[in-house]
Length: 115
Image 1 (tube, rainbow, N blue to C red):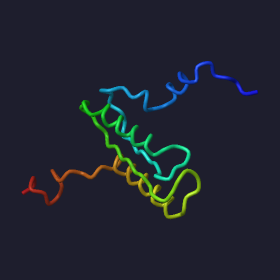
Image 2 (cartoon, rainbow, N blue to C red):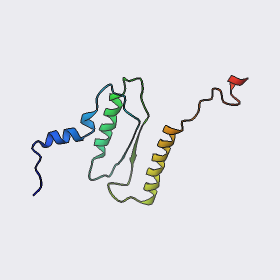
Image 3 (tube, helix red, strand yellow):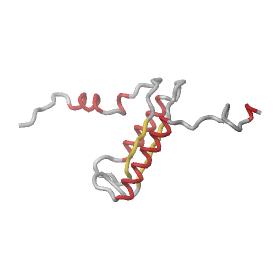
Image 4 (cartoon, one colour):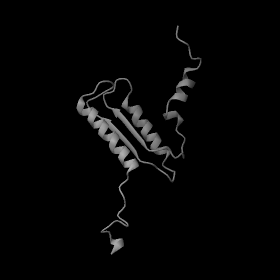
């Protein structure tokens, strides 16, 4: 027999990221992926979580990048190879941006600073 949770709402409240975002907190960069045809979790929940995260970090000095990607013609579970490649490309591009940012032009060879 499954173990009953005495207060399911408290369990879900502690589990869901949406209800645990604290306004004014500097959150790390976020890559948020969803699919418009997901039958197990509505993409609206993902969009709401992304908007709440953006609002919570709006008044902080350190705002990391946030990328929200909504894939079309796919859902929860198996994906066509094209969609797997698209998701992997987005993930790798986001990680490359985080760990190897494009250097500014200041001080670079050929910039106006050296002339």
